[in-house]
Length: 308
Image (tube, rainbow, N blue to C red):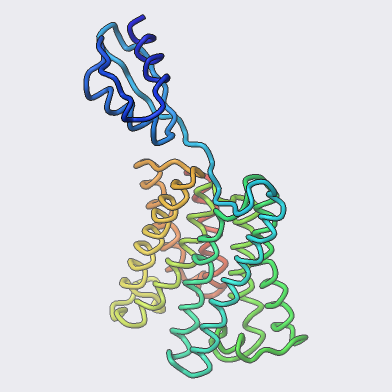
């Protein structure tokens, strides 16, 4: 009964400055903790562990998407799609210009595009409303790139700047492999896993940050090659595992700020395992023969399906 009275008294408060001196079984630590939880809008469950203590357990935070027009979610999602598309296009344009003026060598420029586009796009996900509509509208951004890559790769439409920034040898047909797999992976992860699933976060993080940094680091520090694949190095493989893992954890924290996912040490460990598996698959000869833009996301999706 003392616990019930304490909770009722606490729930009547409207401002932290109104906190009265509550006597009874709760300690000062409990009072301060409950005050912080209630006035920061975090939900809690109170349970009487015994007559002399109170146990506090957090509930899953509610989703608080950063939608721009709360009273009109459809219009808000359309605006979010336009904004996300504009940001993605601006990012691509920057690297088209760096390729045109040869600020970076072609290989580095291509990998910077590879590393940045997917990660920048994921930053825009909280702009969309909750539910399947938000996921579908968000997927239109990389979906449009699938169409564009197909048109350029098939020779139906000509865009030398895109070809130069995304291909290894300046051949438009190269876009039908790596760039097409890349855009398809992000679109698939967006529609199927969206922002509440760690599987999509891990797949995009390992594809973008992991695979991108593997090539950049491997070309500069990769003197020691792997015994089973002379095209890959220890430095590149280690860099991929670290970058994919750090990006995964970073987006876990980012999305947890909006209530889409809960942070936990167990989740961090699973992200690490997925990144290690993805790095291992990327280092295999089959990834060189096929395309690591295909094998890496497949490995992430499969490993994530078992682990998450």
